[in-house]
Image (tube, rainbow, N blue to C red; front, side, top):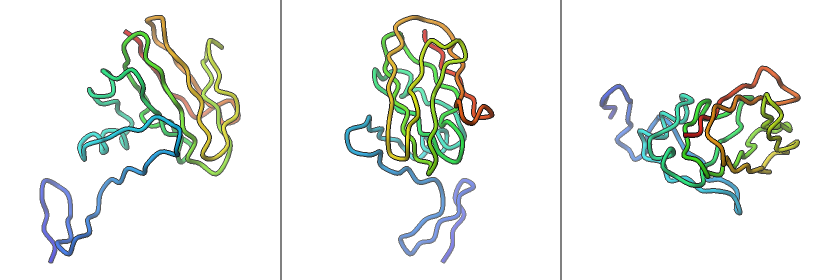
Length: 135
């Protein structure tokens, strides 16, 4: 039996279609996302919950940073986790930070101590771009 609820298709046999959030590798920052937050993350939006955290993660998957834009409080640490099969970086456009090349399953972290807007990209794949806003 199939039911349509708020735009989502659910199979009432215990399985559902929709966003899934994979656990991050051991030793990296873990996020607990509600289904709504998971959808927002897949769409590249930071959640209000993430903005209040001191430690957050950004997935690198399918040649994209997720979320694409994140707003944080001063002093927060961001950990980028590469879920892709190729190596990526998170490199500030102004060269203020660089995670170095991260292979699949590897992570790199940066603590943001100064307010500002930090645009960044992947050095090997310059079309991959994202932004962090520190308040």
